[in-house]
Image 1 (spheres, rainbow, N blue to C red):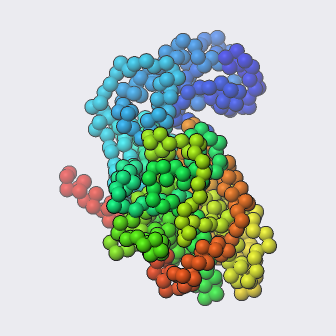
Image 2 (tube, helix red, strand yellow):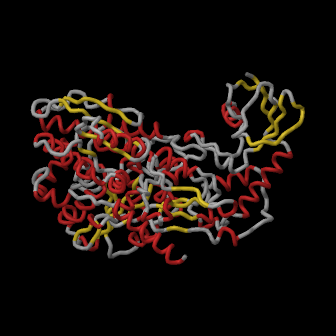
Image 3 (cartoon, rainbow, N blue to C red):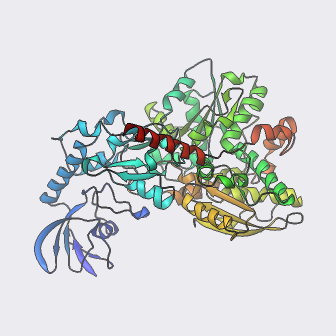
Length: 599
């Protein structure tokens, strides 16, 4: 079928919207609510207006392009004076009911509402009604995510991603008219709800209504305190995503430049979470073998994703025994930094501050878990996201693109294998584990270290892996997104699955698509494949590609830990999990009791 947009003929298929056809043919139409890659076109923002003439009706009509199908012979105009006037008015009305304290907003300079206001030519706002938005909810109860409804434009993207992608369904729409809010199910504070802190809602929010908890000032305080030794770690997925914040191609490896940038900021020690990713594989791989040989609880689930752990604790607490007791690489790093590293560098752990740069908002909550305190001190003191790190660099006038790369500067915890790098993508933990478990069981290296059968982006992937004599063939699965994880848990509970080992990552694509990564405007996970390929390329170029062959890991066990699953490693590197479903129910009971008392 054929129509025209701005005088140019366009071909389209039946039931395609005007907005979709316009995108496919290079015609830009502003919008604040539509997001095609999460199948979200509610038509709530009313900004994507166009002027149309239908073939059988010569009258001009102004319609929303995201909800209006293109028709045979239809004429569409996107920038007529009338369209622009109505778009300006709509943006004005959105701003009238929006907190305009833009200078202090976490989305300053990266706000879709600001972009649209500029695009439609808005020069001033005539309407301003702070008595509406200043009475709206600001919820800082979560250690991971802040909800500020004074900035919400009610696009409902966050509700869609929480419900349809993650299956957590914490965010709901309440009220009507100007009283409409994005609220939390069961009227709970976000920190006491079923929210797992994954931050996927932040990635789709066009404004600053949803944001990561801002911990930048705490990091700056540590950096400028001469009595404090700052030890920084950064995760594998950070190095192939940070460049997007500085107009570099997604997937560009900035590892060495990140080290240089941190040194310029004043960091005392810069190390890599990859080192303890290798350490996790040694512990988790041996734990899996122990469970198989002793006919212990199977399948064993990976434990490196805190949003996934929280999901199990809040929704399937009866399945906690299936989660590996090995701490995540972030927490293993904190434990090693304040013991092994401190001993070797002659540092007082009480004056050390471990700062993590993570692609993940849920890591903020993980660092605050009481299980991860030792002698009254947290293993990891503060976590900032990739986005927060970029904001620090920008405000300090540091562009990593302009820096020469540096090496990690510590002889105890600085080296890593290719297996550790791919922790940042879905399937990477499984692949790294299999490389090492095969060696432990057979004494021989796996012939082909790249397990293509568990790579990819399908939500659930499975394979059969031959671990050789002593373990035989085991069935494994790789899952990403919590909605898919929920389906898999149900099949395991029903006895329909016979896996021995399951890797789960909460975010689409794994850590590379984490809630703390750079956002793509008008797209949800636009850079995922490029970030993933960047991680695989680092693995391919690594001189050592198996965790057990990392010489620094070997040295760590020889000098300090003894052996995997030994007494010391168990004390420092393993943990337990809670039944948090009861905590949520208790919070609900208290809130409903308070409501009853008031009425």
